[in-house]
Image 1 (spheres, rainbow, N blue to C red):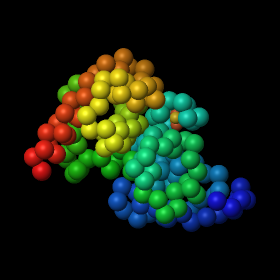
Image 2 (tube, rainbow, N blue to C red):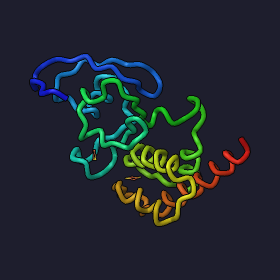
Image 3 (cartoon, rainbow, N blue to C red):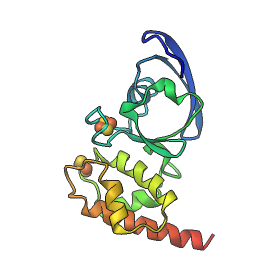
Length: 169
Ligand code: FES
Ligand code: FES
């Protein structure tokens, strides 16, 4: 990307959960602020704001990214997914979300959007993960409430349900 003046204005166009959106931004606006304040899409949470807690994790072209470390101008032309894009319909949860609910894998829910996005990308790459691999993914996220065990169990169960569903397609 060429060097941009910090105060220059830009119009950034990208796909957000399958819909084309445009954001007017200066060069320094973070993706977290573009999503939450410019677009009103508030499912992506902001915790540490320096790449440690994982609360702000979104998918860019299918890969997990820390939205608090990404500039909105970097989204130009990309496919962005947030937690709002997981559920298949407004009144339905997806397999991973259902498993989180069954296993009580959230309490305050602050970490949940980020963990769901990392787990979503992970299970696409690794549909039959070991517990150790799941723990490694979850280890990239801070959760102060659950002790992680129900989160690991939920991801394990979601993986198994997804494998079964794929076998019957
Ligand atoms: S808010 Fe982005 S990693 Fe913590
Ligand atoms: S559920 Fe509260 S931080 Fe994870």
